[in-house]
Length: 595
Image 1 (cartoon, helix red, strand yellow):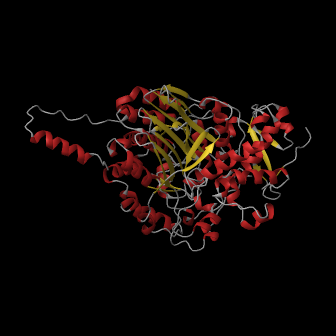
Image 2 (cartoon, rainbow, N blue to C red):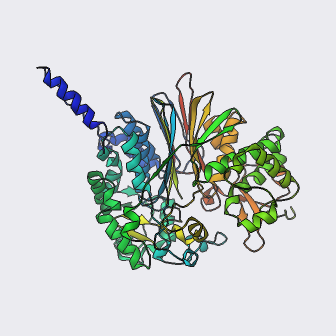
Image 3 (cartoon, rainbow, N blue to C red):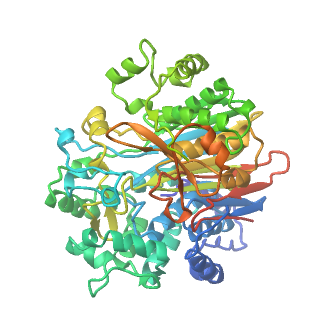
């Protein structure tokens, strides 16, 4: 997997040929195993059991890593930097450790990943799409069973079991492609933290115990899943228990030794297809063997004094970010003050971010709401579109109406290394905690993202890349890369908008931007299509909330994960001093690390 090995061997041959008699000592082999940094490993593992109440912050000049969840993964990524790796090595090390630390619930080695990478030596930005492929043999996607009902506690976990809900995930193919193109450390080394955690086990936190309990019946349904994720006595893993994942450790060792073909054209692929087909799925080995990541030039657009570089379509997140930013500036929102202090600014921010999912509205409805307006990926990133759309929005044309007031999973990694390389990734299983079908093959979870994306699968076509809303990017200012960010969660669009506006328009540091009170993805009544916005308890003055005229809910921090929360993490870099400032999420077991 290492592209620089051959040139090094050629140089060594030349030295020997000219008669050098002094022995050349072998270069030390990097060792990322936590056994080499055990004190920090134990400390960060224990810290994972406690949720933060403010953003993790770290500063340094040699390198920094931040994550949305699982602070130990950030520390594993930092070790990659300390052992001579670059931003890609650290990001991939951290991303894989995240999956092991979550037992494949919100993220998976057969999930998806998007990457934005700034290569400092060339000044170029590269984007990689390793997201879902639809299944070649799926000829009737609208009949795929299942759904998610966000209005009920039971419905959140899905409504139907079927192998047809599985899609072809590119996460591990993406790890391999990114490492092959930009990585520096030996391929097997970036697996070491993940294997170590899987073999030795990890303690179960109170929050994770809740996930096991909520999904217990589904995890108990299939023999292999039960053997992997249910205790030997048949009970759910509880707080304080230690979960070991020996099957996963063996699979990761096989991928480290044989490359990603082990999962896409080898033994794991065969077993995965068999398991999916046993549940009625149509996936075949051809689907896995034919999967390829996509490298593209970035989508680039000005954001005030900054310039955004993000993933282009079929990733929809970049378009949505630019659209929201332009609409906000057109609306005059910044002049109204910050949305935590101004009802007018909050109302505009809510209206602006509602437009982020306009692509998913049927064409006939868009023509009804916005007659004659060209609504394409190309038009949505222009100032002309923003001006006309805001004019219509002010006149009352909106995708949904807000409820009147009554009487009074996924994960992120961002890395910057000492050379200024920046890697920002978002990864996900794109379903709720392992998924209703709950298939596990050799320790790797296979989710059910098709259970709620039937229309998107139909629109993409058989064997094609599915559109994705992830929002990941790098900000430039005066030609210098100054910030990398990634977002996740059902409210990722709202959270990314707030993070970018806080930094670029309100002058906040990355940690100030994370800690500022935020609004979430709204709750929409499926019967009336009226939306209620949601905020954290005590985050906003009551007069600001009431001054919007929109119905709202205040959510306890303990319940935010399934209440529309978005997560945004970032690292900034001062181009003059080289100082790095990393900020993690402020409401879970995240961490930011630097040195």
